Image 1 (spheres, helix red, strand yellow):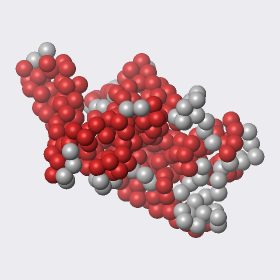
Image 2: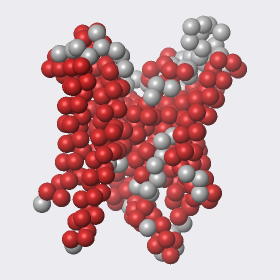
Image 3: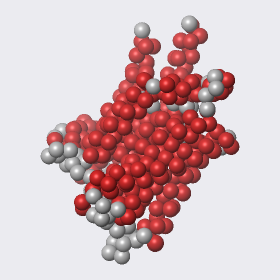
Image 4: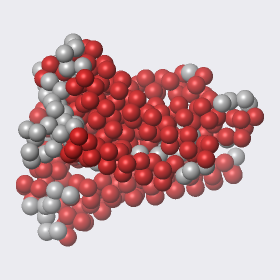
Length: 345
């Protein structure tokens, strides 16, 4: 009976143990553990203002988590979300500038498509290299992160730089008319809505379509999928491209809803944090939504921990790192339980 709930109980246990270990860490730093936890809650979920900050931070995290979660269904560990985010944001900014005289609907649609294409091609290339050249996808996607960040820095500091941006080199502004609006009367931008919609669409795609069944076949046994006549190479490329497109859309959201232009602030760690969220959610598109909100809350509360308890701003990163290690450990525990259950059967 307990084994049937293991996919939920094991990650929750890992999260609870992470909080205990984090409490020991801040205790050694001289802070009051219970007060730190209260600050995290207050900064993340304590007020409506906190909720708005949390949901705003969760928007790109949902999309970058999909960059890891979708290829993981094929057994691939792709960690190139950061590169897809920065290239998607750069492509969105350039498209917005090219369509600066167009209507907002046309401009935003063009920015979204350009960002998804840039991110999708980057991660799609990772899948192609894995299938056709047997290049390890984890290493290639990590290297593509550095390439994407280098391209962004080279262009915004040099060729595409707006001369008026002295302290932080950036491209020209896309225009206030082309910025993403907010949901209702809140400060939560439409990027959060995009994240929810994309997660729902992908859940339906994987659970209710023939394509989703084919992906599960390839992820279960590549040789059996080939013998069944499935185009394995095409499926791997398409799934990786879909994951990269989601991360590229996150870059567009950051440009159109936050910065208004492309700059090095796009390299904010959303892609790396998405890896943790994907594993914590066990690569399930719907589970990514609450997990991303949880980690968005941790990110939103980091400033409050720093001000109220004189802790470094990187304290939230320590918490995320502890969670990541224990989530990976819990994956090993779950795999052992699943193996034992199969042997018993």
